[in-house]
Amino acid sequence: MAISIGVTTLLPKAHIESVQTITPFMITDPRPTLAVSAADPISLGIFQNCLHILLYYTKATQEDSSWLHAGWIKESLSRALVEQPLFAGRFRVNDSGELEVVANDSGIRLIEARTPMTMAEFLSYKSSREDAEDELVFWKTIDEHSPQYSPLFYVQVTYFQCGGSSLGISCSVLLADLLFKENFLKKWADIHHNLLSDKSLPVTPFYNFRHVGKNGKSANNIFVSIPSKKSENVDSENDDALKICVEEAESKYGFGKLFVKINSSSCGAVKVENFRKEGLAKPKIKGIAEAGWDFFGAKEVGFREGNKPASVSYWFGFISGGVVMAVPSSADREGAYSVIVTVPDLED
Image (cartoon, rainbow, N blue to C red):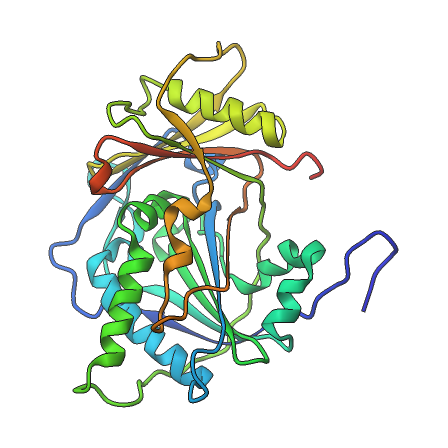
């Protein structure tokens, strides 16, 4: 099926078959919190904006079945959530009237879907693949009036006709730094490996599903710059590193007037605010190096031995303008920050 000349061919849509809530394998006690500082949460878009990560996997073995693979994915995910329970948490207003995320074990949503295409066919559609990838992830915007009921993290497992599958991660931008800093996907994959090799566990997992719908629209254009100088700090008082990253991103991908800055710290807090570049002098700062998404290591995440992703995609969803995100780096690079810049699509 095709549309007018000059417009990309439409790909078949993925059909969502089921949904389940996955909670941590153990009760979280005590419950960690993440303080959220935002003058106007709704206008800043913190209830809409999300990060998507999409990993494609070929069929690992001839014995693999879709329901068996998804079952073990859920078993391992519930155990991985024990190490990072904030993903299974919800927004709340604390006793001081401030917004925060609390790890209350409400759970994440796991979606199971199927597409009539093979993975090779899907990946071959270069021109329309970016739009089609929206079908392989799920994100429902957080309810602005009752955010305490909305999940902050979704996983969608989509099966291709060839037996391959994709793993689509969608999480609130406020929790995105935990994916990178804590190397959550790698830890989850390691737990999955250990489960599959544990002979004391049942041969088959147990999980059933119910049908749900899907909506949502994504954005793209990503630029990543990694400060390599450990002594360089990024905070609301010193935006030099952020300014130069925005300058570099705009020189490559386009221009934006207003960005939303998301500044995560290592002390359990995240600050969201407008970031205007008008009138800013171009800063002179050393120790900043450009890098791609591969820096975050998703291409090395394999849930089966020797079965690393055939392809990986990253993008932000529901972004109407630009975003500047400062993410503390992992423990082995203490004091360093990763700065992610998205530039608005000038065609939108």
